[in-house]
Image 1: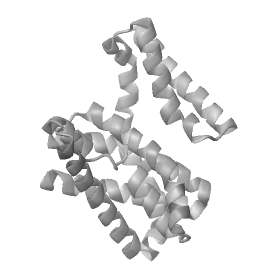
Image 2 (image 1 turned 180 degrees about the horizontal axis):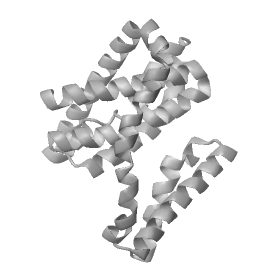
Image 3 (image 1 turned 90 degrees about the horizontal axis):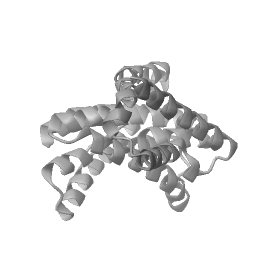
Image 4 (image 1 turned 30 degrees about the vertical axis):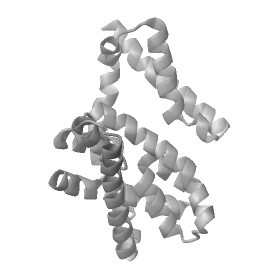
Length: 222
């Protein structure tokens, strides 16, 4: 019990410290999504702490993903006017982007000859973590693997996204927001807000719509 509490508090403390570091020096390689798991893995390996004992406390953070899923309705409500104004462009972009993400994930898995369980775990990689884990479990994947792949996708998307925008000369804020929200979910949305409030808002909406689209389509197709 005590070890579980220490694991929980330690995880929160490491994340808080990593977040403060990122605020002081906003380099992508210092993002808390990258630094926190690296430090935690290093500590678990160094102390030879069994994952089950660590997860006795860490699992409570996983449980918080469920109310976080419900909370996604808030930005949709707050930004309903923007959504209504650009609904056609956003829906087309999100649907196309989500479809490409799922199909490319499946093709990449087949190319690497991954098992069906791992392949199903990778399919919802462009969906925000709490919903991606539910989709993964529903279609036969492993939610833990999905969470790792989703975070990796978000980090890579937030790194590569700005270069793609400059390379393709994408000046439209709606297009930028759809790109980040659909391809890189939460991490991409955080990066989108660094570009402009409108880009970040559209990214938030796109992230939620991409999750809903994948939630409806993936179980039927895969």
